[in-house]
Length: 497
Ligand SMILES: Cc1cc2nc3c(=O)[nH]c(=O)nc-3n(C[C@H](O)[C@H](O)[C@H](O)COP(=O)(O)OP(=O)(O)OC[C@H]3O[C@@H](n4cnc5c(N)ncnc54)[C@H](O)[C@@H]3O)c2cc1C
Ligand code: FES
Image 1 (spheres, rainbow, N blue to C red):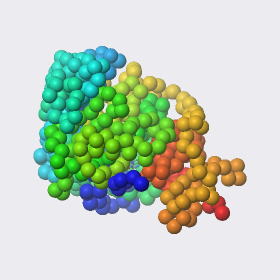
Image 2: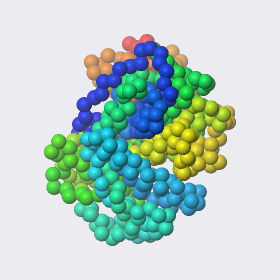
Image 3: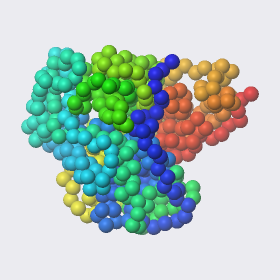
Image 4: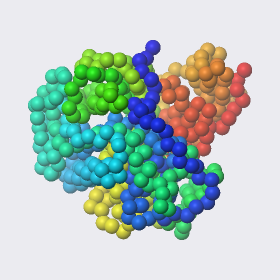
């Protein structure tokens, strides 16, 4: 039996929003698809620059990846300076760091100016080393980041409750309650001719003058469209081949006596990410890690147990209160994307590939697009540009995906043995069928063939979802699409008897 509720601390400690769904046709200067940090940051920046905006969110504000983050707002992305400088040269690493530093300050300003109550707190952020090899790497990162003008120092004084050899420390960083921040952004966006719509899944996007965005029950005609759905909906731009999905897990445990001053991530494997936050009079310590490509299966329960054990044994926390996992889009060349959806798109723009650092990368990407669409220069737009030379093939022909080898997929139980809350994929009448047993034990069947490009989905017992191992589309137990690139639900099938 696993400890803790399967829900993110951020979602569990925030009331839900109730914006209307789009039920008519509307005009706006800019339509923004997706109400996560990227979409809402872009929407607010554009509204402040004088545009009318309409945000279309498929579910509720804060229920996407941002609602499942760890909550660090930092430009110290483990060893990103070294990795990006090795790969793209120091100028690109500097631009990436500067864009993220500017994002921290933007978040701080918005919190203050909009009066957003989201536990925003300035902290130092550390990448720490336990092994000799990791120590050399954090020393190098500190030296390089310092040379690039980032607020870096090497320190052997790391305020963790266990011994480490040293760390690179960035001062003036921050942490926040991600869902409260998003709800604050949404409040600031809605009104005075701009709108936030929830429960409004976008099913079609068309370039043109105007560009048109469609849901099942209305359309928005707009001068410009920003697709900020984390994984872009549809196939244009071939982002499913220019990024891959990576999943990580977090446990939040009660910790009355843990004096953690700062946020932390390890260089040594298994990678561990640490943050403490006080909510409603209780102190929670978050321990994250156990990351893996979404296509690789594994025992999620075991991953949570390992994180809980780390938290208990090394951070001195008590029982786990909440546990959650989510996946983010990782760009193959290591740089986020903010730019036109395809090389020839005139009015369609996209933000993706936020590489698990989207609180700042998503903010930076949103500000880049807001600048571009407002006719302002942005010093970092070339580094994030979707059509940069290192960004893979944007205009090519879609390759049929390879289904991961069977050995990487979880073992599937037989339909007859399904208990409430369990699911399995079986062949019925020659068709791969995804079968789920609901709380009452009644069987629900949908096609197991992903509506994106035809891979076979697998059951995610943790979240009761059908996840596609090829490009990360996710579907609810009843087949409703949750996360793209798929835009259509899994087709219903007769329930097996
Ligand atoms: C476990 C974990 C921990 C992390 N911790 C940190 C951290 O500490 N700091 C940090 O900077 N980053 C962190 N990240 C990364 C960060 O959380 C993400 O990069 C960021 O939240 C992504 O924001 P987004 O706006 O792209 O996506 P989302 O928040 O998912 O927003 C996209 C929205 O689009 C909506 N949508 C999807 N399809 C449609 C459609 N067809 N129509 C309308 N709406 C649609 C979704 O419902 C969703 O609400 C972490 C990532 C993981 C996996
Ligand atoms: S997400 Fe591409 S085939 Fe399923």
